Image 1: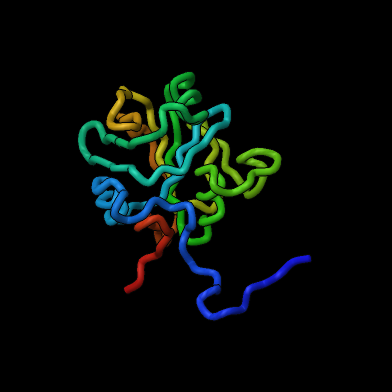
Image 2 (image 1 turned 30 degrees about the vertical axis):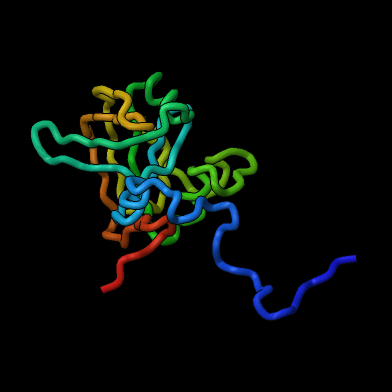
Length: 177
C-alpha cells in the first residue's frame, strides 16, 4: 500500500535532496556557477561528443579556440585520435540535446541516434545549430580538474543568427531584452 502525506510542510520541494549544503560548497565552484556561459556541443570523428560551457574564441592570426573538457571523456579520446573537432553553438531548443551529451539525459541507441546531423570532417554537428567552427587541435594540458584544449579555428559556418543557450547557476537560461 502506498501512502501520501498531505500534512502542511510535507510538500515536495524544488531542491535536490542530494545536493551539498551551500556552506560546504567550494567557493570557486560557486563563483564559476555565477558566471553565465554559452552552451556548446563539441564533437569529433568517431563520432563522439560532449556538452561544454567553458569555451572561448580568440580572434587573431591565427584564430583560436580554447575550452576546458573532461580528460576522461570519449570526446577527448576521439579528438586525440583525429586531431580535429567541431564546436557548435546551441540554442534554447537544444536543452535536451545538451543534457544528453552531458550524460544527464538517457541516450537510447547512442548520443547521435536522434535529431538531424550535418556530417563534417571535424565531426557531426546539429543541423539546426546556430553555427559551428571546425578546429585543429594544437595542444592540451591538465588545467585544474579539466583539460585545457587549445585549437586553431580552420573553418566557420554561421547559420541565421539564433539566440544562445546559456548555463548559469546550474540551469539553462536564455537572453531576454
